[in-house]
Image (cartoon, rainbow, N blue to C red):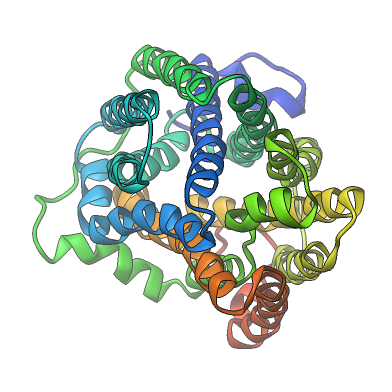
Amino acid sequence: MNDQEQGPAPAARFAAFSYSAYARYWTARLCSTFAIQIVAVAVAWQIYDLTRDPLDLGIIGLVQFLPLLLLVLITGAVADRFGRKLVMVLSIAGQLTCTLTILYFSWRGLTTPFPVFVALAGMGIARAFFGPASQSLTVNLVPTHIFPNAVAWNSSAWQLASIAGPVMGGLLYGISKDVPYITAAVLLLASFGLTASIPRPAQRTHVPKVTFSSLFDGLRYIQKEKVVLGAISLDLFAVLLGGAVALLPVYARDVLELGPWGLGILRAAPGIGALIIASWLAASPIRNHAGRIMFACVALFGFFTVVFGLSTITWLSIIALALVGAADMVSVYIRETLLQLWTPDEVRGRVNAVNMVFLGASNELGEFRAGFMAAWIGVVPAVVFGGMGAMAVAGIWAWKFPQLRDAKHLEHRD
């Protein structure tokens, strides 16, 4: 789709939804993310209930991250070489298969977490292909001037699922350990159908034949473009150190003494804060001082993580997590807009594949870091030291990447 194509004239807040292909894409991503959030809560509670070992919570993240790392050179090339819609459809089918596999083992009765780890590794493979394709597809569905609005709504879908998914996962797990997986399977099936119904999007397919050298084009572009490198590496190290999601089952059971429903609320709290900010950004996009705002919000992300880590009061913990999500949302919005608008379409899939590794390292590998540190020095110190590390990263990156710090606008301006 080119910039001259016109859709209806909706209110600015909902501009992206005037394009039906984007509306289907957004709904499909909402359903798939909703399903993954439900599975994440159910698996975390089920495994911790089985072993009572926080290291196992870290392994959940590790087995999902390794496919991202090992397949990074392949997934991006696939997204650039083949239809991004087709890659998304096949990836969702893979996630559905893995969810049904976990359901089968749960129904038979788990005595060891190993079968679930294997299924999660398979889900990690599917998500490794899904991420670059889905992120790269957005810019092919709406005009460039609508793209920042689409980014805000993409983030809103993720955050909405992050709010409702964990709460529903906790409530459904309270009914039966199998019901969350059945619900997730239904949502993934809906996502599969919606994605398949998206009209074939415009995509530059005149890319050179894939060679060993071309597999590294994404890495070369990121290394050359310092603003993009600074943005995604900032997120990598801040969330790698400051992420506390993996340890929420421990806080819900042992620190705050809540049940599965409490875990759902804790998992949802960051999404609540993020959704509020995403709704605001959809109508009032950041137009100036983007770099400085990003660094300030990363520092706040670390600060509120420390507050959560030290809290033993339920309401304070929930508020702190909501503020963590709000600060992170601003950083995500700026990073994703910069990444997509500053990257040429012909290498966007490969660049997004590298970005997915960075995100996976910050999230899933961050979960492993949190679980390992919790087993080593204790849960509370692991969270507090991690939040302090995120604040330190914000300061160091502001010094090391002045181009990003001084970036005023999200659009690429030569």
